[in-house]
Length: 640
Image (cartoon, rainbow, N blue to C red; front, side, top):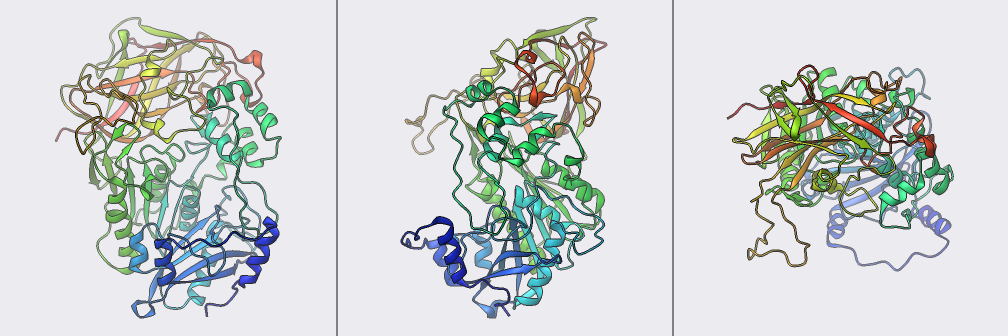
């Protein structure tokens, strides 16, 4: 049964030689992990036919120990290649963690439509088709359904149950598989799923284009392919400087960046940049509005400090829970960067320590038991929310997210840089700064040519020293303050420009006597590390931009009227953090965050095509008076 639609090994040899034009280098000794997989699993390769006749390349790894079966399927679908190709070529890892390989699963890996060895046309975040009228109406839900049908019929010793998981883009494919899900699909774990690129994932945050991340990713990647092929090496873009701030500033506007360095060759980067409002291109690709008929148990995973797909997990979790109230759906959030739960121990990020091996905990105590329960009938189901509380550094379980006990409270901005839960009483009070798009506020305080994942918790002291950054902080806290859920800035502003960004950051300020890092072995400073003083450290917890022209609509932009008071209200993704006694809560407000986001010219215009003369200084005012109070709304947990 396992030889149907298989690729002969000779085809792979011919394809590989044709692509690289030379013989392969001598084989290197297999790694121990690869040896284990090779010893315990047999690999098969298929071209699985879809309902429209296209065939998708699929690798299947079946346990050699048939007596311990039948086994469930554990599937992943990816645009990033299921390499290595060839039935005698094995990877060093099959499942989400080593536990799965030792427990015994039939692992399935598939190149999605139009990528690498799969046929068909690749479409960026292929829009879901709710009403499929013919076999030509295909999407990633139907491709998954057809794949499962094939596997159940043609792979022996299976127990009739299928699980699927994936991180980032594979997380999107996991979410898509859940819609109108196949009856055999009983467990799915979309992890950091790309969900709505305009609404807080990779593409745009608050209407501002995520410049450095998009150019750095799409520039050297996702080139079109017209026929099946094996991957070629990706060549990183050469910035010609270690300083991306300098590079992007000199490049000018986004369109000029494309003309100078990509020559219009990368349609995906162009699509991201030119669709600068929430138009039909983005709406069609928002999976959250299609999450219906989800019949499998769902484990949504995200990281508090995910610089790529921060909003996707929440949108997926909320939509799945709302549209499928009877479906077991769990949200897991930990102190991780993008995909950080799948590697390492998760004990720290940058200078911030979590004093727990959070990634190992998730893999062993949450993810593995989830699939074991639904695919093998072992153990118990997960609670509604499994979340790591930073600050106190402990795991907590809740029966709802945000927790039902969390109550909304406003942190008000005050004159003199004060921040408190008390509303201002002054008849007139405001702060102002001059924002210069030709001298934007950097998003990190050091030189880099990338978007360091650690920026999500980096020290913000460098920004607080700038005259174009407003800083507000509480007195040292007399007791712990725990916040859980979304953060909602509510600003009263005026601007001399016709458009401006307002970037708001929520920060945990450490006490001045907070100890510096110590070596665990002998209590001495790490000798090869630069001096690091954690006293007064301003740890970023959450920061988001908001482009003022979107204040009333994501579809139809409106200019600011210079000098007129305007409300800027928006929401930032969830957090679960305790500000410890003795710490301070800080809020920073600025109007650029470069080159994390593109520059707002501060004139109402088509920003990707803005001309140099349109980038103008603007005087920004933030009001904090009795009849125009500005602040940040947070959800505060009751005292234990």
